Length: 498
Image 1 (cartoon, one colour):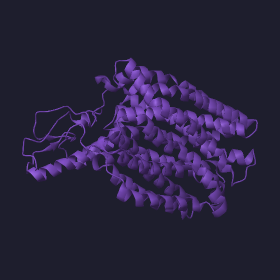
Image 2 (cartoon, rainbow, N blue to C red):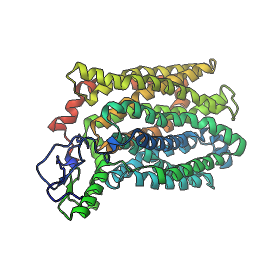
Image 3 (cartoon, rainbow, N blue to C red):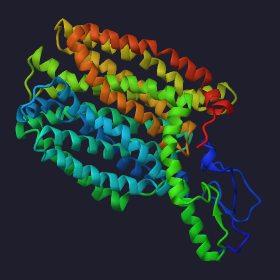
Image 4 (cartoon, helix red, strand yellow):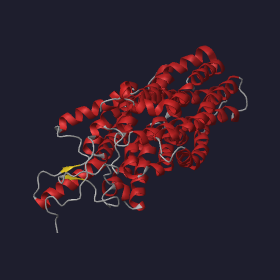
């Protein structure tokens, strides 16, 4: 029997538009009978209370597409010499651009995609952007000149940024804080391992069938995801789900005054969308902690794509690998990430709980950050090993080991900060991730363009030494994040009105 007006179980809380730390499972009780929240802590409509099977099905589908779009970023890197030959180009910068322009799309897509997901929900964005990704990927495959290829690569990267940007929000929607370390580790592994595995398959396809088939295979895989996601992937955004519950109760009770406890405000959808679109930029430019985290991540991410865009040429010219096997050298990065993921998955949540127990029981987001220290050592070490061993043409396994150290270090950089931002900005996790993605993607696109020229001028040894020095110079930021992160997030002086 529908509840009568005034008898609905309700709670109210602060306006989430100005409270980024609000959790959809932790809204304070209210005496207002017209404010609707979940029907208790075990409400099955709350994504946090869904069955394990339902939550994992959504994560598996999300991880599939999250793997595919970074996979596309580097899949045809071994085929670049074929592309330049077909389009009669000999430019080193163009060879790097045709790879890195895809990552530049990652910088622009999140500015619109993340806000849209916080207005219209997660699933519509996943489906729509996947369809666009399919179209633009096919456009790459049929390109008639290098300019057309670069343009479609950029558009494909823009659409492909969706699962990377919104995925952290989906995880925050469906898993509690003490569970997120393992889930984020598995999901982020898709982001990191995709670029490492892509060239392995891409080199074989390009050599056997031509570089265009790299894109056709990607399009087929995307179509498979769309076919599965439409019937099986669920909407997880709690703000939208609770609003649907309110609409249902309005129809059942006739009480048009009912409103959601998670409602952002009474503003129009257009105004809300404008606020949401500007939110990632506000976080990036106005929050010292978000900017600092974004800068730290961006440098390591840029180095990884510098390796992806230049390593083919190094192993073709200096080690005389053939085009069908050169993609195997990218596995060094992936193996390093795979080993680190196993370690990270074991220690991340355990460290959070251990520090919380030792310091009063509260699980603070900053307890995720000590795991940045291994990355601070591995990234410069990997650059030095790779650079100097390749410079002196030592056995090829040694520079590959160097790239493995770099891959491991990148994982120990991206994962702690990624989980930290989800824990700190749960309702706005997608916007916080978007802010980080913007800066890291810009450097992911620009560092390869500049780095290729640095290698030509300084050589692989001294070129990578300079890059390692920059990485070491940034390590004091880790101490700042751990020591002052909570202050920078919560102090009124540093507050960002969202």
